[in-house]
Image 1: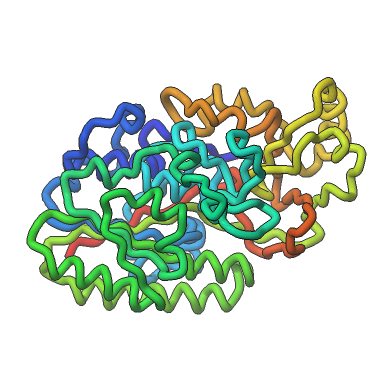
Image 2: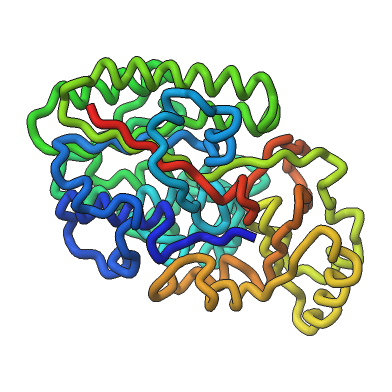
Length: 390
């Protein structure tokens, strides 16, 4: 088991280093986290431009095995940890707010939003079963996304460069704050946008740049697939061209990921419909992730629930009281968001080996991705920190 290292070795600590290097306005929630041990604020303070390039899904294990010898691998500075759960909705929220899940309380792809009485897909800000965004019903996204965007604290001109199909989403609009948003269509457009920003400004600048091209391919084809290797080579070649393009610009490029991947074949998926007795003990569908599922148990059913999991699912899942995970610091340091406890349920199932767990609700399309993440294996939790100076 590999847990986040919020004491100085996680992506949250990297954001703390960046904040302090850019003379951010004080924030008590962010101050709960020390600088990243491998890259303290003073190591960043001299650069005019800081680029944070996030390659969604690029785990440390992948980079040092299949990616060995690449341009990205040549700049590897350290192995750092993601957050818990090791998933995009939770980790990207930390990149954008500078705090851990303990504070932003976006705890997975699916979440029970008690304040709305709704089971929702957090990044899409819509009900889990689909349909229109909750904002279409007049719900202000900032009533759910309550953590202050990091960009509002920085003493630097900030940009967010993100795919055109998500840059104006409710989630992004709530999290970009004062940053100027720049959309792009293709991978080449991502780095062309960043290069133009770097070359076009004379003031101090922070650029948050994001691609999900690697993640999308890994989900579809798996972490050992030729399709993923081809996508990595494409990204690596674009990265090399980008560094050449911005040479001499006084820019520090920090490349990192939100999580890594493992492969999970369909037979390794525990489907809740095959366990009707267990399903009857739950008051809500499973929340969180296939690799880390939050369980809301019917009143008076705790003992029966624990017994069932420990006798029928012991081969594939570790069972924890979610309150214990909060107390033990799985979600972060410092005071917790008042919504955190209700968003992680009564129990958490942390899946072993390559197992996942899934239920289905009415209106939801049935599909299983081959590549998965969200758990506490080394491949999912460890991400690379890559440095380049231009």
